[in-house]
Image (cartoon, rainbow, N blue to C red; front, side, top):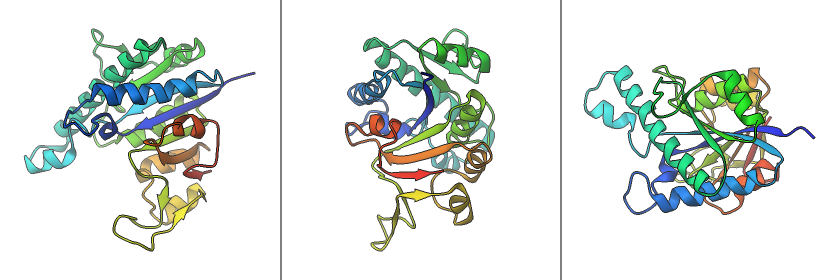
Length: 236
């Protein structure tokens, strides 16, 4: 039976843990274990994209008066650091993993080539895509949608750090915020719901890519989301 191809989108902040470290080894190991639990089902080909917010944030760049393109390239490098950390954690657990980068750093990782990425997935490797799209002005959300479309992934698992789905407004400030169990891509775009940026959401809509938004901090949730269980918010 053909395996289902997935993209898992992780926030960079999730790798930092509570100890004040930009990359907390124990937290990275925990996340790798959660991903491995889904991988071990032998039902999925898994690609991963991780943000860089634990190392570098646009807000810092604005405060420094930095030009946007330079700030974005710094963010891309941060995602590569996170990708390498996650790769090593997965390989320590016996999972063959490849990091592929949109920026050309051959001493560090393979360059991103679509056909090579698909080949790696077909060989049973987890592929981590670092460096965003390789272009400024595009988020890692957009990278997730773009790579999913390129490699033929059917679903993006938006693994959120402490957020258990999509709400009508910010539940931290609005006690009446409603959580949605299911949405359409059209509803997300029409109502400006905070799932991913509009470019990414439109790419998913145009390519029929399902999105699952869930809290990655609950043990077992990545595996449950991959299996299509009723957790978080499903967007079809």
